[in-house]
Every structure is written in structure tokens, then in C-alpha cells.
Length: 431
Ligand code: UD1
Ligand code: MG
Image 1 (cartoon, helix red, strand yellow):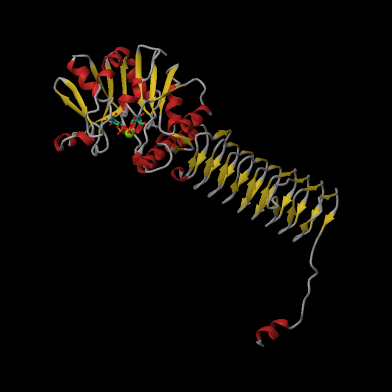
Image 2 (spheres, protein in one colour):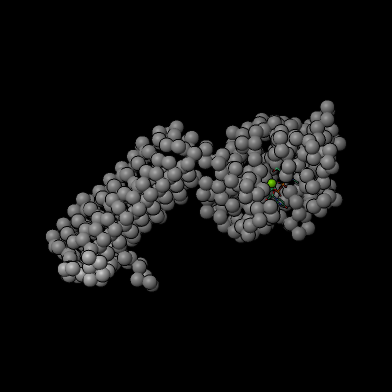
């Protein structure tokens, strides 16, 4: 781990056309920067993140996940640009890997070429049919000459298809020698890190080009790029879990966030969306379900059910158009069209079609506690706070207004049915 890593995350990201800092835009449920830091920590014990634009928000979000990284604030007023970003750092090791913060697809394995190289500068290059947006790498027979940013490039230079992927390793002495010599005499009046290449070249230092692939080194500058990166990340996440034994029908229609974990053997039908810190164990999720921050074991869910955060569901059947929020269900059947929120429901209980827990009175939320082997008839409303003890029968269409139904009881509230003979013909004037 004798490598220092600096991640540049201070820029504004104007091309995202967003009020959110670029590096906080999410892919698979986590900020882009999260993935880069996570991979960096696999190969370095000295990771520095350079921040400036929305620095508090960026730092706060990253500190939720990582406690061993350093933050340095760029003096972006006086030294804007990627070169300016590296000026304030104090690396621990002799070799410094610099990563752009907008490359969420990078992996530790993809960085191994930088670790292995002993050149003064190692830089990543890829070849693109459409190089627009990237800095072009000018290469002669003698090797890499310089990098020219798109905004400073001539028409001829713009036609070059070798581009700078945005990851470099430098020896500490290269940074110490050349960073103070950078100028901002260019189209963007910025201090470009990329100008170090031409300076080092002039002094005959060794510059080693590393040919890399776009799948790992893609830079995200626009919301279009973000969507392309998302597809690549999703394909990786799905592949990983399929290899762990999860079955997926039409995988390209399934969305699984980074924090989701599977155990045992689960099945996902097409169009499933799994978010947050969800855990699924031996569970079948039918098509069109959305599951957020929940634990589900040995159950079947959907089609088209919505399981909202902090639900814990075991040995349960949830059918179509059922919404569950912050509830605990074990050994339950809720087959159709229900809302169960802030509820605890015990084993053997059957929730009829259209049952609703009325958990909110407009000001506060209340709990509904339902015991074992309760039969809740269709279209019943359970007004919380409410405790329904074991072995209760709630008749269809009942609005439960008392706070407790005792064990073994029948609860029934109904308007008596009136049937008026011949009324239809009288009302519509038809025979
Ligand atoms: C940069 C490279 C370009 C390369 C491309 C690869 C430079 C001058 N250009 O261009 O050659 O092809 O990446 O993706 O380096 N940042 C700061 N402080 C700043 C400016 C930027 O920390 O003052 C950070 C950004 O937050 C971002 C990264 O540096 O994470 C790259 O900045 P960006 O503006 O995206 O550079 P590109 O124009 O893409
Ligand atoms: Mg970029």
C-alpha cells in the first residue's frame, strides 16, 4: 500500500446543469465519489479528497461511509483547475495516483497498471471514435508529447482520437517540481494538471502511457454520461449477484442498488427495483415491485407491490397492489390492494383485499398491533392506535374505531343493508 491517492472532487460540474455538486450525483443509489473512494481504499492507506464546490455537502456525505480519508479544500479562487486542485496536498508516499472524481466505474483492479509502473509519470489513454469532451493526447514517434484540452485545441488537434482518461500517477518530486510552474494561460484561465506532461517531457522524464478501457475509465460530465455509467454499473451489480445464485428474468429490466444484499436463493422477475440497504433471503419478487430499505426472508412479493423503508417481512405472501411501510409481518397473507403502515402482524393472520391501516391522523402516526390467526375481512379500516389480540374475526367492511379488540372476538361495524323493491325502474324511468 505504498501509494498515495488524490481524488479531485472540487469542481462545479457545470455540464451537469444541476444544483447538486457533480460528484454527489448518484449511480446505483450512491454518490459517484463513493465508488471511487471505496475502490481507492482497497489499494491505498493515504486517500485525500480535494473539495471546494459545495464542500460541506460533499464531505458530509462521504463521512457517512468512510472515516479514514483526508479532505483538502482547494484554493479555487486563486488556483482553479485540476492542477490547482493538486497544489494543496501532502502525500505520505513517494508515488501519487491522481484520480478525477467523476469516474465512478473505476476499480482497484483497473488501477493495477499504475501501481506496477515505475515511470516518472504514468497516464491513462483511451481511443475513442468520438473523442469530444476529453483532452487529446498528442503522441509522436518519441512518445507522449502533451495533452491539449478540447477548448484549446485546433481543428487538427480535435481530430486526434487518443484521449486523456483522467488518471495519472506521478512521483512526489514531479508534483513538487512542476506544480508551482503551471500557468493559467489557456481558454479556461485554469491551472491544468495535464500541462505537467509537456513540462516533464521537455525535461526528458519518463512518461508511460497506459492504454485503458472506457468501461472502467469513463468520465461523467453530463446527465447523459451519468445514464451510460449507470447502465454499466447495473450490469456489474446484476452479474455479481447472479453469480452468487440469484435468478433474474430479463436482467436488463432489473435495478439493484449498491447497498442491496442477497442470501440463499432468490428470484427476481422483470421490472423489479431494489433500493437502499435491502436484504433478500430465499424470496421471490414478482414483476413490477419496488422494495426500499427492507428485510424480506422466505416470502413472495407482488406483482406490483411497494415495500417501503424499514419493513421486516418473513414467511409471508404479499400480493398485487399492496403497500407496506415500516411494518413487521411474519407468517402473514396479504393478497390484494392493501396499505399496511406502522403495523406489527402476527403469524397465521389473513389480511383481506382492500384492508387499510389508518396510521395517520394528519398530525401524528400511530401503531397497529395485530396478533396471531386474525382474519381481517375485505375493505376494513383499522384506525390506529389499535391492538387486535389473537384469534379475532373482523367482518368485511368494518371500520375498527376502538383501541383494542379482545382475544377471540368478532369485530363488526356495518350500516344495515336496505333493499327497496323496484327502485331501479322508478329512478331511471325504464321498464
Ligand atoms: C479532465 C482533463 C481532460 C481529460 C478528462 C477525463 C484537465 C485539465 N483535463 O477534463 O484532459 O480528458 O478530465 O475525464 O485535467 N476538479 C477539481 N478542481 C477544479 C476543477 C476540476 O477538483 O478546479 C475536479 C472535478 O471535480 C472533476 C475532475 O477534477 O472530478 C475533472 O474535472 P472536469 O472539469 O470534469 O475535467 P474535464 O473537463 O472532464
Ligand atoms: Mg470530467
